[in-house]
Length: 138
Image 1 (tube, rainbow, N blue to C red):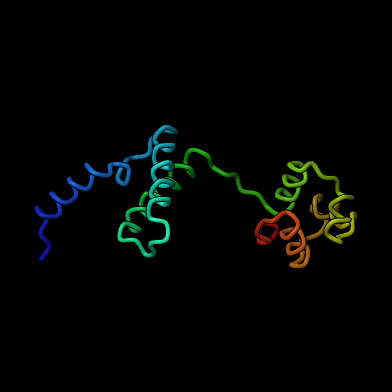
Image 2 (cartoon, rainbow, N blue to C red):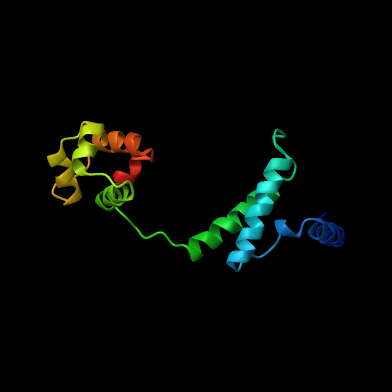
């Protein structure tokens, strides 16, 4: 039988000892505190796997991820959008990308203009070059 009064006392005590495990993340300052706490936790328990507090750290990680998804939404992007973004970020020309990946420049142009679909080989080569998941292009 669950002992709710005992659980309540234990939770209140634990919440007082490590409020960051249970904090609401509503602002960027909350996010910074939660992230700093999680970093400190990881550093302190380094090498102890599994650690008895790992489930609490996982719950905090989920709250951080949920806040970031609401606060910093990532727009949907398909292969051509991702390739254009990565080219712009470098900055890198189609010719330079072609030389580095072995994908002909005309194919890269067709991929960017949506005249040609990405193949698994294109995704693999681009993923390796940009050091990203090849699935981003498919």
